[in-house]
Length: 391
Image (tube, rainbow, N blue to C red; front, side, top):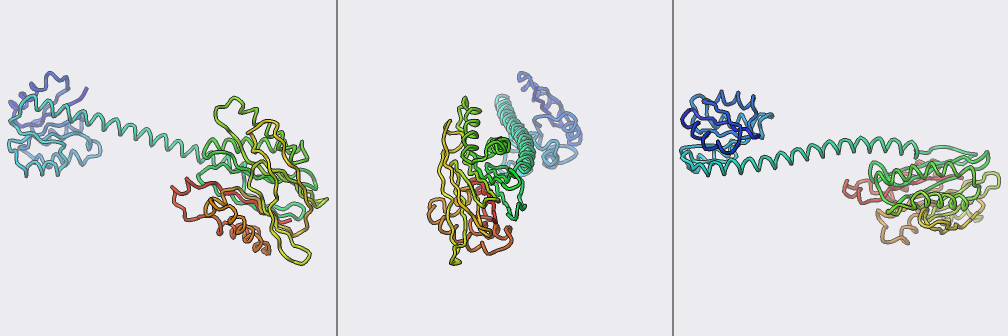
């Protein structure tokens, strides 16, 4: 039930107003002075105050200011009632926060109409504030969940800075949002072999992060069982197709999987639609040659029983491989992949002479990543992942 406080020094006037509002069903209180009115406003928290412009103790304008200036009562409606209906009195009432103004010699229907109209607006305002509060609470919960999701994802996709049999690995992950859809890993398979995984799932946000976590665990489970990259991608694809066979939403991932055999000094690899790594080799004449590790294949989860190409090539100590996701090209070269590849090969070849892989990553990101992007631009950007592999 809505509550109304009538503030009027005249008992006769208060009774008249009460009679006008008797049929409305509102709960009505009265106060004969400004100080009593302020006390009752604080105690009863009325929805609307019908305020006489002339009070015996304090200015009605000051009382309105106090009501609107108090954090507890700032949304209480104030309807000024004055025997003077002048432009100055109306403007002054509005300036101190009054919500409406009515001449004291009012018609009963006009008073009821104004009160009902103001209360409808207040109800809508209260609903909006409640929805806003609920939205803020949900956003706060979502922020906590995103931070927790980021921590879980970071545990599954850690920053890599490690060595294996004189091979150095270093990584960088730049999600467009708190959590992203890229994933990568470096897995020791035996005393002489190590696998490098680079992947990118469809979509962004929480659903993409959940899929990256699932794929990371699936790959870690399958890697010890299948020595050849094409075999691993085959079974990974079938497992993912089976999981989402009844899903209405298409879920898929692009994955490049490679195995480095340090004993044979060879690199074996297969690809499921992922951006191709670039390898920089030193030719006998001393020239640095950058080339893509070409391989084609259907993304994981798109089609059951898809087959994948198997490739291998020898490597020499000092060769460099840069694994990356396609977010690297989207910032500046989204509509010009040929120019991106030309520039990328150039940057990677120039960076090969550096000893520190972290410095190589910094050079690559400075060339292709927009650090100054706004939050809106970041939302439209893709995640960026890099692994530098110094053989």
